[in-house]
Every structure is written in C-alpha cells, then in structure tokens.
Length: 362
Image (cartoon, rainbow, N blue to C red; front, top):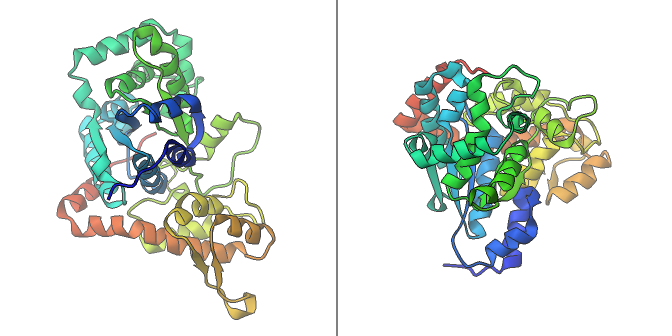
C-alpha cells in the first residue's frame, strides 16, 4: 500500500537524518519537483562495520527512502586503496566491500530502494576521469588539502600523492552518480561544500547536503578547543580503536564488556555515548525500554521515549550502571540478526573469516 506523504512530512523525515542541511529551501524545491531524487553515501571498505556504519546507516537510509528518495551506496574500494587502507591491498579491500553488503542486507535496510555501486565501475569511464580532472583544474592544492578531513587525515599530516586525488574523486562521484543529495556524515562536509562550489562552474548542479550525526565512540570526549566538526570527528566511533566501537558481529559478551567500560558520567547527558545510543539507535527501533533493577534500587523501570530518559537520567533517578545493562541488552538485540546471518550463511561466514584475518591499518 502506497501512503501519500506531503512535502512537509518528507522534510520532517529528512530533518531527522540531517544534523545540518544545506540548503533546506533547495531540498524543499527538490521534493516538490515530482521527479526521481537520488541521495548517496560512500564508504571505504577498510575493516569490520560497527553499529554507526550499519544500524545508524540503515535507520537513516530508511527515513530517506520513506521520504521518496532513491538511495545509492558507493562501495569506495578505489578510495580505500588510495587511502592506503588494509596496507593498500585492493583484493582485500574488495573482499571487505562484499562483506559490508552482507551486513547491510541483514541490518534492516530498505533494499528495495537502495542500489549498491562499486567505485571500480566508474574507473573504467573516461567521462568520470574528465570530471576529476576538471575539479582538479578549478581547485587549488590548498583547497583540496582542506578536504583531507574526509579521509580521516589532517592537513598537517604527510599525505601520499594518491590521497591528493581523493577529494577530487569524491567530488566527481556526486556528479557521476547523478546525486541530488549528499547524505554523508558531518566529517564529509568539506568535500560536499567543494561540490557545491565547483558544480555550477562545470555545468553540473549544486547538490543539497544532508549531513548526519556521527555516533560517539565509547571513550570520553577529547579535551581542548576544537571546531564542532573536528570535535565530532575526534569523538566518533572508529574501527582503528576496537574498544571504542561495537561491531556488527560482536558477541553478546563483547557488547556487555564494552558497554560496561564505556564513558557514562552520572546525570550528564551531553557527550555521553550511552545516552547517544539510546537516542539514535535504541528508541529508533524500540518505542519503550525496560531497565531491570533490584527492588531495593527502585525495581524495574519502563521508559517511553528519549525525552523521558533525559529527564530521569539528568535528575539522578537512574544510575549509569543500570542504564548500561539495559543498553547492552537492546544493542545486542539490534546486532543479533546480523550476527546470526554470518553464522548461518556460508558465503557470509567465509567473508567474515577473511575480513577478521586482515590487519586494519589507519
């Protein structure tokens, strides 16, 4: 059954995805155009997927497709190669790409309205490389270096020549995929803004940027003054720091152990990863959660929505240890279908074994 949704309802769904939208009036115009709208996100195959890359990705994609947007996920194998991931071994990188698709297939993503496209397909197209060259021709080296954040690098790092190509290529992806919307994380903002700058100059369009929130890792937030994007990047879940991340095939015991050790200050909501997982993951999939407690500590507690949780937690009516036990249980429920898929499907199981054998490199 097709449910009619007006523009305001579609906008509201996309606002739930976008921590920042550039520009909302352009997005409204797209939604009112009546034509097919394409959004894209790209991901380097560089190791096991964690809950931010799978569960949060599926939640956001499903909101975009519910709003009538077709979604393209770019398996950025050549980008991981250019960025020297997995030691620059392209065969390993492409194995990880196949594993990633298996994760997304089992994560509850709306696959009817999602297309997976490999970057290596574009590399055979001379028009793609013409676009890359034209972006490079209209951008200074300094401007491109400012985009190094998209690779998880800083401007001050010593970069390989391949990494200088990377932002020009990622910018070209947008036009190659005919993407109206760049729906990536806040850490990809700089290259999306580059696309908005160069697109009209090269006879293309100015893509709308819908930047999603980057889920915190389990560690404490960084100290010192950082700009908001740099701070969010430093705080995000990262596969290069395994104890900061919950992976999609972690065992129930792994999840409990990691959550138990996680940063979760009493009564503090801001920069608290456990509260974040409730907001962005658990309450997106469960309308109500139960915190199990002994009677002497108040007994079991039913919480109906994130706002209620914030009120209870900030008032000190819920101890971090009790919240952690509940969060570990619900996160395990979200991960469980993926874990079972990799246990039961022989092809998926083989891919996971291979991926686990690879040494993750930054």
